[in-house]
Structure formats: C-alpha cells, structure tokens
Amino acid sequence: MATLKVPAHVPAPSEDAEQLRKAFEGWGTNEKLIIDILAHRNAAQRNSIRKAYGEAYGEDLLTSLDKELSSDFERAVLLFTLDPAERDAFLANEATKRLTSSNWVLMEIACTRSSYELFNVRKAYHARYKKSLEEDVAHHTTGEYRKLLVPLVSAFRYEGEEVNMTLAKSEAKILRDKISDKHYSDEEVIRIVTTRSKAQLNATLNHYNSAFGNAINKDLKADPKDEFLKLLRAVIKCLTVPEKYFEKVLRQAINKLGTDERALTRVVTTRAEVDMVRIKEAYQRRNSVPLEKAVAGDTSGDHERMLLALIGAGDV
Amino acid sequence: MAYPDHLEALNKAFSGIGVDENSLISIVANSNHEHKKSFRKGCSKLFIEDQNGFERMDQSIIKNLKLEFKRFRDAVVLSLLHPWERDARLIEKAMKKGQKHYDVIVEIACTRSSNELLGARKAYHSLFHHSVEEHLATHVKGCERKLLVALVSAYRYEGPKVNEDVVKSEAEILSNAIKNADKRKPIEDEDTIMILATRSKPHLKAVYEHYNKICDKSLTEDLEAEGILKDTVECLCTPETYFTRILDAGLSVDGDEESKRAVTRVIVTQREALVKEGYAPNKIQGILTGHYKDFILGSLAREEMNKPL
Image (cartoon, rainbow over all chains, first blue to last red; front, top):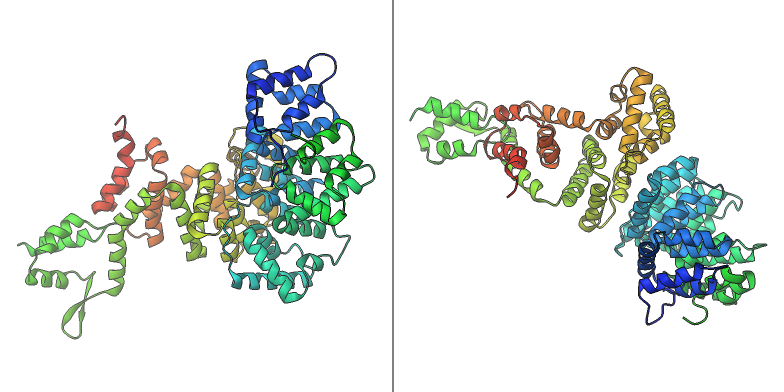
C-alpha cells in the first residue's frame, strides 16, 4: 500500500502548474511549495501537471526543475515527478553506465515490478534511449551477471496464482543439487529463477525449506564474499518478499557512514505509490524505530522534507 | 458414363495440395456400385488388391488424404484467429512437436514486430497459464534452448538508428564464432545469442552487410550447417528470402507435410507483405486444388479487392 498522501480536493493541473511556475520565479526557489504539490499528487496527476506546464510555459517541467533545484533534493523531486515507467527506464539506463551498484538497480527493477510494469519500462526505454533495455544490459554486463540479468529484464512472467506442487518439488530438488555442487549460475538455476511465475517460485522455495531444513537464502550464504551469490539472494528476496528486500536497502543506506542518498531516494520515490506501508512496517519490526525517525535523523533540509512527505509523515 | 475419364479425373482430384472437392462431388457422390468398383480397380495409387478378394485402401494414403482434406479447414481457422492467439498456438504446437519444428518458433519470434511478439506472449499467458519463455526453457532440452528463449523474450527497438562502430565489432564477433565452430557451436555462443536476440533489426541488417564485406560470403551461407541459427539470421536480416524459400519448398507435390503446412502458415500470416511485394502465385495454380486453392488465391488477392468497401 502506498504512503503517498493526496489531498481530497486536488487543484486543476493548470493551477498546480501555475503554482510551480511561481515557485521558480524570482531569486531562490520555493522548495516547500514544490514539495507541497509534487509530493502529494499521484502518477496520473503528475503527468497532467507536466502536460499543463509544458503547454503553458513551453518548457518541460523536468527541465525547469533541473534548472532550479540541485543535488539530492533535485534528484528526489525529478525522480518522483517522472511517470513510473519513465523513472525506471531512467534508473535502468543510469545503471548500465556505472559500475558496482548498477547490477543491483537492474535486478531490483526487473524483480520487484509486475510483468506489465516491466514491459512498460521496456517501452519507455525505447522511447527515451532509442535502444532496447535488454541490449544495453547485454552490452554492459558480462559472464554470469549477464546470464542472470538479461533474462531477468526480458521476463514476462505469468501472473496467475496457480501452482504445480509436483513441479515445485522437482525444481526445489534441482536447486538443492546445484547449490550443493556450488553451481550457482547453472542454466537450471537461471531458468527457474528467471522464468517461473512468482507464485510457482514461492511454492518451490517453501518446499525447499520444508524438505531440506534451510531456507534457500541460508544455503546461498555459503561464501559470504561472493558478489554473485549476494545478487542471487537478492533476486530471490525481491521475487518473494520485496518489502524485506527494500527494508534492508533502506537500513543499509541509512546506517552507512554518510548515508547512501541515492539508494534512499531511489527506494522512497519508487515505492511511495506501491508498498511503502509494508516496507515501513518491516523497517519498524527490524529496527525498532519508525522509518520517518531514521530518515529525519540521517537527512536534512529540503531533501529530508521531500522524503518524509513521500513516506507519509506529516499532513497532506 | 466414360469410366476412364472419370478415373483420370478422380486421380487428379486427389493429386494436388488440397483436394478438388467439386470434382469429388460430381464424380463420387452419385456413382453407383459398378463405377466405384472400377475406380478402386483402376486407382492403384489408392487401392491394393487384397488376397481375400477385395480392393483394400492403402492406410498411409488414407492418412495423407485426411491431411489434404484438412488443409482448407486449417487455413480458414488460422485466418480467423486473432494474430496473437494464432502465434501463441503456433509456438506451443511447434515446441511440443520437437526439434524439427523449432524453425517455426524462430520464424514467429523473428519476423513479427516487437508489439506483435508482445501480444503473442500475452495471449500465451491466457491460453496456457504459463509464460512462453517458461515453457520453452523447460521443454527445449538441447543446444537450441538458450537461443529460442532469448528470441521470444526480445522487445527490439524499432527505430532506424544504428551505431556503425558497434555494427563492425559485432560482425567480427559473429565471424569469430563461426570460425571457431569446431571448438564451440555458434548456437551456444553467448555473444552470438546476445547480438541476435537483443539488437534491432536495422542494426542486424547492417551487421549482415558488413559481414558480407569482411568475409566474402554472406552470414546465411556461412551458417548453412547451423540449423535454426541460420533461420534466425535469415528471418531477422532477409525475411523475404526466408519466406520465398519456404513457399518454394512447400509448393511442390513431393514436399513433405511440414513444408506444405508451412505454405498455409506463411500465406496466412504474411498476406499483406506478400501482396505488397506482388508475390505471383503462378505455381499455386498448378499445384493447389479445390477449396484450399481458392482460399489461398483469395487471400493473396484480397487487398486489391478490398479497396474502399
């Protein structure tokens, strides 16, 4: 469930656009007004505002925001203003350009979005970057990471709830055998993890736990330094218990010396309209502290205000 | 009643692709006991003299005849289906039939537009309650698996933009993969699969051209021995050549059943393209027969007839 708070009566998009324009005028910028509007509109409303703004002032709202704002606050506002599919396309493209965390962002998008959402990301990617998402991922990853990530971003998983228990048992066994032999990027592991429906995968992993005594992620911790294994464990978490995955990302982003602003901003802006309520619950359970408090303690200024607004702190 | 003429006509009614329904009605429907006996005795293609004193129909012929009678029906049904359902069902059938039919999967994955392929994937969910890549990954056990799964998962960019440097380096990569075929089958080479399964068609056509320049032979020629990998390149880079080849092979009375079925599939699914390039169905007149012939000819003519209704 979303933490985004939208007022009961929302002004017309043209009014919001006019207010935003006013926020940019003169010396300095009225950041509070920007947050008051953009952090309290849903995706459809934000799209309408963008359209109205463009028609009224001949400039894309995002361009104006880019001119007026800076650093983490700007990134949070820009990311949140974007349509979800465009936003994911932007994040994915950015991820193919940088090292290290890039694989994580790609994996996160591929595994926590619904099948249709992921396809919308692929469409948005075409429109914005004039290439396909899978070709960029294929071009910028290698070895076992490529073997895992290309099928993940190309998947169009069946979304029904049907489960075949016989299959769950046999595939749990296959996973167990491959893991015991330390063949973590084996074709069969990749096949099961990248093509099965989430419901089927859940059943398989539940059976794994019952039959073999350990949750699969415990068995995949055999080598704590293995980066590929870390990614594989995250894939499994994202596909089965995404709110726990996001809780961990937030926890690590906040606890890190200096805070990983990008990860924090990414999770908040991408989940505020999806399942931030559950993520907050998971965070509270795990850390004994409300997420709002942790975020407030670790960020400041307009960036902090934007993030807090998105996670539902304070009034509408 | 001129029996020899009727015998000849009957033989003719059964000796094309499809059956001549009208002739069969006029010859067989109201022929009496004597006529039919003379047909059976005179038609050695269909009937054999049984030791127990009767003319027995050859069972394998019955099987083939059934296929010929079915051809019109199959063409109609295929034409009526929504293209997404049609492609999803074609893929599923081909996958179940096994390795010899994987070229059909390649044909669909590679000659449809990105959105048509997406549509087929959606239809597959509805019809079979699994994703197409999930089924392919499970059912295809051999070396074709990686390629097929990657091809059906593609959502290729469809713009014309092409990066010349990348084109050149990828033509080199393919050339090396082919040169090393004895060490590792190109169809299992990860880089080859990535290029063919993720790049846009304009890009791949440019790669095809560049390969020709650097290797003197065309990519399809050099892939002659590589099964569906050759079909993949042909479908992506020179689809007209691919479809012409399929139609030529199928429009022959000696062709096997799969080749003949391919004719129905290609004409129904590629109708607009065939009509646009003025595909001349000369061969069809002589080889197809009956309602099936009329339906196929009608399919190819329809665009012209259908100008403002």
